Image 1 (cartoon, rainbow, N blue to C red):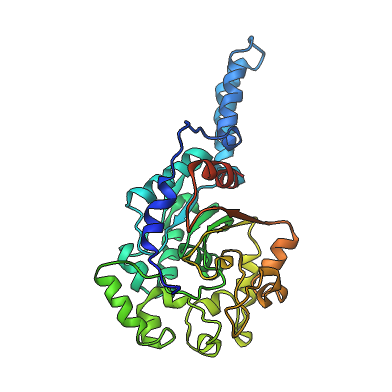
Image 2 (image 1 turned 180 degrees about the horizontal axis):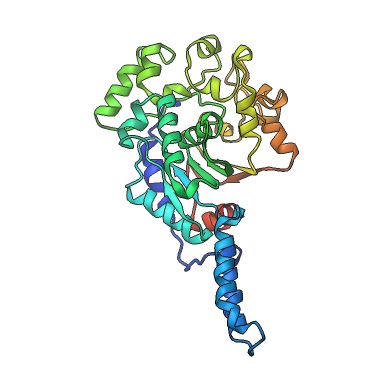
Length: 344
């Protein structure tokens, strides 16, 4: 009974939380360029000095230098949506704009294929390749950027971080309800031809090649009582998490552990991710559903397969727990907990 529709959560809950008060971007979100302009404006109101005639030139020079320096606070951000969603949907557009307003940074939602359909049926490796090429093609990301992932979108974001050769550097990554250690459930939608197709594919076996190539969520389904088939047949998550000793890749670990900061958000009433602790890299031990290992108890952490332990020991991981269901977060929480990491 772990099966549940994820579509409604991704498309509405996170964006529609009521917030009666008017919210404004925090002062800390001002970019260096804005501070330069403000300082120059204040100087212009002072009594004339021997350098008064040079102020326009000085201001222009400061702006030009600021444009080329890799200030962390001037970095744009990108968003990867969850399964069954689209960047053009009102909810995603509103979320991206809210975070841009709160942080003072440019935000872009990266669409993979046609969004809704391809989030279900395009294999994860292809989704990551497409995202990688889009990221590399955007001029405003070339000095680096921050990543926000929603649910399944976190695995696309991590795939770009770990696998994308020649891509610009990722500074911070903010994960909202991401199935980082896998999920022992299958996210099913409610109605429609895509959902009917998903049901038919699941009957053929999660780890069969056909299902892995035609149902995206199959790439991160991890059944703890069927790990042999998971390691043998799952095409994406074992690679992403460096789980297979004979295929462990030091480059993936180096890229993941190069993050300036990783923010992992778990939702206490999450019934989509099974278990919810996967949002913090926790998961079931082998061969049982009875207990859940916290992230520090897993081999992934203890043996530091992807660099999570390295990041945590360097003080570069923040674990947040919100009280609601999957992706249920208010505008106040967006501004208070997410925006500062985009303006950092």
